[in-house]
View 1 (spheres, rainbow, N blue to C red):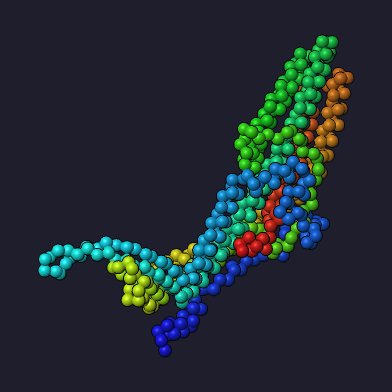
View 2 (cartoon, one colour):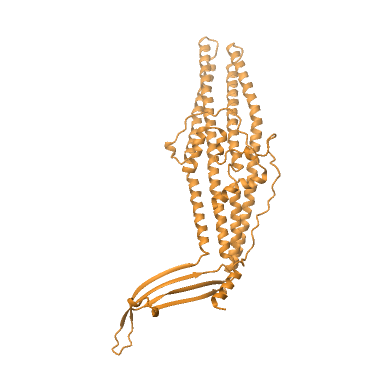
Length: 473
């Protein structure tokens, strides 16, 4: 049996001898249903799901759709994760290339000055020409290359999921900021109406004071209420400007050149969002998928560190020609070649490899804990959003009644003041109560929209596990 045959049998017998633990996904306790699921809501069917990807379209707002479409194009945070994803793909390609032999070629021409052995003692100057072609290949005896490939592939999948999660987070933040801004527009409209009502009340008190049926204090109180409402109307613009600037950053535009026209949020219930089973959340959340893939990559790195304890085998071959005469460079006597295996092992490293293995196991435990924490956080976010929607729906019904009662009380007090049967202080109190009730109603309406966007984000938006597998290939 020749040396090459022996090496071939050796490598074919040991190529699949991978060392290290096999990966098993961490076991998790998944509830059968969501505790805060509203009554009457059913588990989503495939036909019930909101638009894949463009989930914000369920709110039926054309301007919101236009803004959200710009996230993928202009958002710089998303661009960072897109570049990270491309980097992970390149590293995976590099890991796959390690399975193939390395081939190199070199050519050189040198002038050499060597001591002469001639009687006159003069040195000799020669020219040396050489051309070589070499190849080397390291068989994957202990599964190092295979585990490196799987680790990098898991990193690609993790990066793809992180990319999707960055998009989803930016989209959800945009939608929530958009509804916060529209809520402030609605509050601004309410404040403007309040200023108008207070101005009419001031005119009424001034007329009654001129007729001698109202005190000077009534005029001052009405004037104070008007000025306070005007100040509140101006102050509302600060928060609106901040939300507008935040939206500008999300769509990748300087705040100085970005503006949104005032468009008050209309009173409406948020869209009904079909729920999935809690177990499906593990496949619909990109952050969960990313955490699980990182744990899988960390497990492969344990095997890579353990393989360092075993010897490595390198098969190499080289051939070429060397001559001191250029015309004889390719003649048979000038040809040289070499062929042979090399077996190398580290005998002593002061415990470095053992420490690397311990560190790799600890890194796997960390990533596994991150995965479990991501799952727990996901269930918390869904339950928080469901609880918010349930409670806000109940609060909205009661607050609407409060608005109606406050408006009726204000009408009665105004009529009593006009008839001279009550003091103007009662009017101011009724006006403040009515304004507070309406402002609270507007805020609840905005919170319901924000919570609906939060629920969609918590459910994974329009993403699922199959998209990660498709992007990573």
